[in-house]
Structures are given as structure tokens and as C-alpha cells.
Image (cartoon, each protein chain N blue to C red):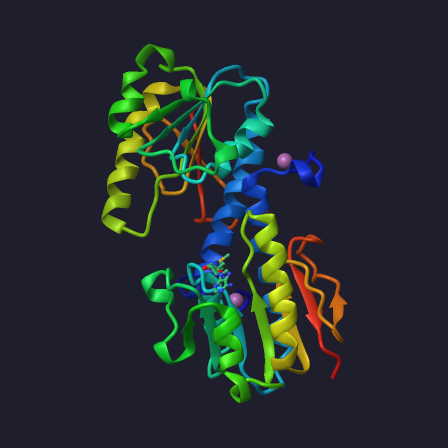
Length: 171
Length: 171
Ligand SMILES: C[S@@+](CC[C@H](N)C(=O)[O-])C[C@H]1O[C@@H](n2cnc3c(N)ncnc32)[C@H](O)[C@@H]1O
Ligand code: NI
Ligand code: NI
């Protein structure tokens, strides 16, 4: 990059800028929830990179992870009691009371290169997350979400706008 | 990251720091070869991220890409005349005179999480690249390489030492 407009950035830069923004949002979130007890939710385990980052920085927190399948690196796998395999549409609501209104940080990382699918998963996250989030809770997302009653936050320094999305439920 | 020693960084940070360093090395290399005509070599197409970055920044250059398989995103695939599928050990030397002593930039990106394999592919790159490189040519690598007659360069600003490797054949 340097010289090109956002629509012309390379695949390398797309990945780099997304990881940079995600990393900066996570650092922000770790500070923001430091004094707020409560569980953390990861929607989309993927290779387990973010889960690995979460568990290293949030020792002692319960981290609930959701994905259709477990394709994570062997050393980045949640313990089975905190990994919920299946369609998030079913697995997340099924946790009901265990999470309702208690989650202090949720990372929704469900996007792909399929636009229509992205529209659908963003709508799903926007519908399923508010019921589980605590007051003051942070939602991070790789896709923009229309979260009722949340405020959109500017990205922290080091993150390029539009490469990740950050929301907060007022406390 | 922030608080942890290098051996304790998360999988997210490993990937982020590698991409950051790679991106910075590429920017350095684009400057360094700007006035030097000659082809470019990419060892390891992978998903095609780096190839996509190379072709956007090096319009008009010939880019020769090598991999065992073509698993790149559909819109990140080299034209068939510049994609050499098979074992690099065979496909690169087979190009013989077309490349000998002419390559101004080579990116060797063959690493995996298998240490023993990494040792072997690094030895292979270190053996196969010098014959094709031009005077003043730049070699970038995800693994440290013992390149006879090359100088190791410090990484450009923005890259963390040890996350990528940069070499130059004196001109
Ligand atoms: C890390 S990926 C390359 C990533 C790519 N540069 C990118 O930016 O998307 C490594 C690739 O090297 C290929 N590879 C590793 N050793 C090889 C060998 N000896 N011969 C041919 N291909 C090899 C693998 O098939 C794999 O696709
Ligand atoms: Ni650029
Ligand atoms: Ni850290």
C-alpha cells in the first residue's frame, strides 16, 4: 500500500489491515472490560488465532466459542465444555440463561468473500448478540452490525477505519 | 501483544507480525529494484496474497510463481505461462537460462509449522536462489536463509526483527 485507493488494495493488505484492526480492537477491549466481570464470546473459531489471543490476555475468564466445525490448529482449541459446534443460530440461543445479559466482550468474526452470506451472518449476529450482552459490553465484528441500543465506537489508533467494527452497549 | 515475550505471543500476533514484516520488506524491495530491470520470483503461491500484491506494485514485470499446487483465490492466480506447478526443486532449475543471473526480487515463502520441513525448504531456497539472482537483487524470506555472497539487511521500519528476512546480493 501507500499509493492506492482502498478498493485497489491487494489481498495481502486486506488480510494485514483486518488483522491490524482486530488486534487494536482487542487491546482496546481488554482495557475496557478489565474491571467488568463476565464471560466472553467468540463467534467463529476458524484457525483459533483470535481464541488463542483471547485466552492469553484474559486468563481466568470463561470464553465461549462457536463454530460450525473445529478446524483450529491443535494447540488453539478450546476445551470441549466451551466449544459449541453447529449452527450459531441454534447453539448460541441454546445457552440461554448462562449468557443472558452477562457477556462483556463478543467478537463476531464470521465474514467470507461471499457478499450475500455476509449480509445474512451480520443480520444474525445483530439479532443474537444484544440479548446476551451486559451493560457496558463490547462487540467487535469483521462486518458492520446494526446493533439496537449500542453505540458505534471509532477504531483505536493503529487500526484503519472500516477494517473492523467496534460497538459498546452503554452501561 | 504489549506485555508478553516473543515466545509467548499469540497465534494472531504471529500471523499479524509476519504479514507486517512481509509488507514492509516488499515496500522496501519495490524501491530497491525500481531502476533495475529483470524478472521477479515468488516461491510459494499459497492463497495468492503476495502474488496479488506483487503484480499490483510491479506492473509490467514478469513474475514467475512456483508451487506444488494452485490453491490461490480465483482472482489471485498467475497466468498459466508464469505458474510452475510441481516440486520447486525441479521446476525452478528447469527454467535455466530464462532466469539465470537475472532475477531482481525473489520472495521465498515456503514455511509451515513443521520445523524439520522448514529446515529443508530453507536449505533448498538457499541453494536454488543464488544462481538465478542478479547483482543487486533482493531475496525476502519467511525463514532465515544461508545465502552465499549475500548480505543480510536489517528489516525496514514497521517490521519486527525476526518476523521476515531480507538479503541483498551486492551489485
Ligand atoms: C505459506 S504458503 C505461501 C503463501 C503465499 N506467499 C501468500 O502470500 O499467500 C507456502 C506454499 O509453499 C508451497 N510449497 C512448500 N514447499 C514446496 C516445495 N518444495 N515445492 C513446491 N511448493 C512448495 C506450499 O504448497 C504452499 O502453498
Ligand atoms: Ni501499496
Ligand atoms: Ni499482547
